[in-house]
Length: 464
Image (cartoon, rainbow, N blue to C red; front, side, top):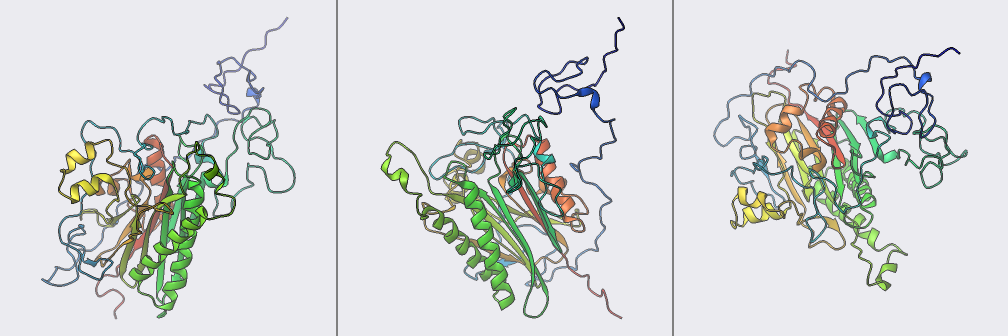
């Protein structure tokens, strides 16, 4: 009797169901995957997780004259701007975070009144768990031109499981054969328009993506372009956080698209957009059929809630607005000039520092440090949208992101190091690089980032 040599597939786990394999296996013992039918290994292109490309050399900014609106360096205390009340922003340095020595990665935003950690720590009792398959980085992209989705289509019968490739997917999104959850549309989303791009990913630990974004481009009454990006992060311990973030992003984006072409000042338009987003989230708690838990005193429910951060680039202005702990960063194209964080967190630690009750080291070492003190939702305190307008004198890119990214690049200098040098020219690629950076760091939270290039034409350019 002849003995057929056993193939050496070189795989540690089955590509179908992620069960452990031995080197001589011809079939997976769990799902029956035919390992001898594996295609020949092809060269896998590098996933963008590091800066790629030659740094762009930008001309030096003109010297700043006393009292002028130009700025020699892009630092939070130097960027000229106004606050929500029209007053000049203070020239005191905006806090640029750095990791607390000897402490774990910072936790994500917690629900109202709690400080439950999410990002940067191992999952505890929040219901999150690590999925063996599929990798969310291989999930279906929303834009451009997505391939046929692996999840069950709305019509046309059940789809095959992307894990075992044998079972049919039930209406609940799970395989009837191996039980694996199928990729959902929101597991990984990408979108790119002229002058703005965004990427959102479920991460490696959460069972769903509770982030959402909206990116758009429009024109002002004078015909000049305007680009906008909205990023929202659902509060995980609240009810239906994924719906809250989606409703807020959609409402804020629609509000800006309606206000900017009418000639509304971008900073006022941003304020109105945050108010519209808050009303959209509040309405989720008022929907019929959502109050049944009131009759069950033993069931804990919080109103849907999320954070929001947005950016508008129009007419030489850079406007940001936010509520919560999602952030916006300024990264100049000329990396010899300092980057800046443009937002201040609505968090317990930030309040302690602002009130002078603790220094930064003490506040951010406390377990309550990242508990949010501001959010959108029916059970939030009085809504207090923060907005600020800046007028940079050189080109750069605005990074608008959730804490799923900035937990892995918290200081402005850290963020600038992981933003590719050509991010202004290839914003979608830049956003992919940043999401890859968070995934490589552990992907403990949902990750969403939008990049909005800001271009300043050098003096004398285009003149005869």
